[in-house]
Image 1 (spheres, rainbow, N blue to C red):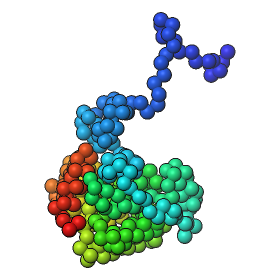
Image 2 (cartoon, rainbow, N blue to C red):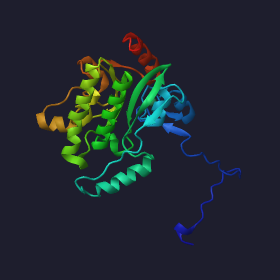
Image 3 (cartoon, rainbow, N blue to C red):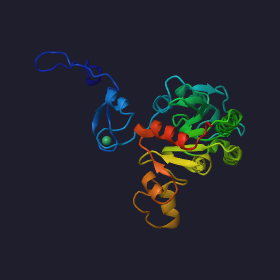
Image 4 (tube, protein in one colour):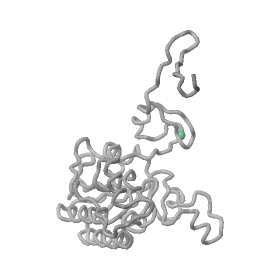
Length: 283
Ligand SMILES: [Zn+2]
């Protein structure tokens, strides 16, 4: 019998059958390498109980952590990208969109809508890193603009959670234009004296950092998140100097005045409630 056609029979020495552990029951912390029971990790808001490492989380998890249960009403779900430039690199852009839609079960890289934080109504947007790295093309820019317009109409504050590789290169200049478009929308929000809170998660980079993610009246970062414009390697090669330790991480950015505060995930809901109260939004 050939080696590869042999049936695998795994038996313990005492003859018992091997107990299969279902996939995903345990997770390994990429920071401290601790093996953590998935259920315990979920209960701890996907933060390592040993070293406080914040795992990257998806949109559903983010909603669960931040908002009151079942308070979120999503709007503009159906808008999806076209391929205005007929762009192709190793794959066609149109194929990449189809694959991302299939993978995430979402039509674009951002969700927007209305929700509640401990009873306080807010307008919320969350970038989905699983959808083409949370990159900003025309659709993300348009949806963020509509989110801000809804906030102005309803006189509610905006909270935006970013996690993104930046502008979407497959839409070239059309992606870059979204930086100006979203910034202008937020300018109108400010004219209407409505607050904008930006939450930066790991990683937030490129054109997203260079526009709406850094324009918060209050910019909040998750611990140890990578936040920057160009990546550290590119900067190092350009300026030909060693970068300081912790460069482009939340803690470094708070120290240098780029971010206002670092809030651990476990405290985010409580902190947002307090900030909304301090800002007297609902009077
Ligand atoms: Zn850990």
